[in-house]
Length: 228
Image: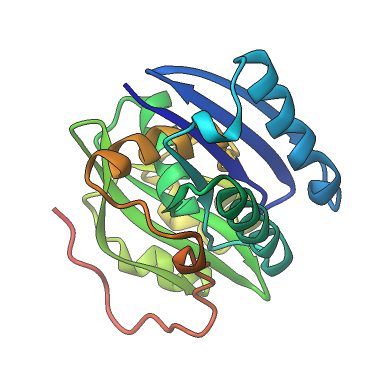
């Protein structure tokens, strides 16, 4: 039995999700520049509907990036503040892993590349494989020019998910001609809370002050990750 709350604010989507023994309720809104206004009311509504207090939870989870700097910082600040006030551990979940889980769930594929618009003519991306319901990163997450993504992922990945592919369709045309796209998806707190369930079972919750963001902007792709 477990009770988890997850939040996500790193793109123009804002969402929160509550997991209670496998049952999930959520709130979601496309709301550029309104995340600070919306996220705490979403949390309050979910807890009220579930007749729970923060102190009834086992842990909090949030999307730790990569994503917009301000959006990621909002998620970190809210998660840390709530966790410290309720003396809860925090689970950090990759936004790309959450996006890949969404794509895998929709398509039924076992290996998928997820990409988000990183602005400045670049994409955040990572290749993930489904592993007993969880998502396993293959290689490493990266930020790069779209053309590097197309050259790096090899032939083993047949599905692409995320808004990064829509923003750079022209640069990724060769890649997309030979692979299926799973909508124009954005990460969602329901996928974060699902992945947090596995992370909690592995004992990966940390004290709030150690729940840190990941931006990727200072990392450079030098070689392709190995693919299975």
